[in-house]
Length: 97
Image (spheres, helix red, strand yellow):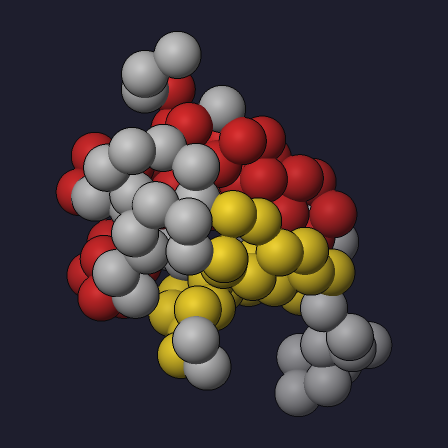
């Protein structure tokens, strides 16, 4: 695959389950996880998408509790990136238990 044609993304959809939703601290954790991967990673909600490595982009998605977000990644470690972000979301961003 060339850089112009990265091929189909690895993607999955997750429900934001923590009470406070995708607030600043949760968004920062998501951005930190996404930044650990070489793949291009984006998060989408309600038809809008953002670079998952951009704190402002992620915050602007306004992911409240119950929102469904789709994580897409393109690259050699795309599967791992999507899985790691999914685990973070399922773990309520490490917040309330």
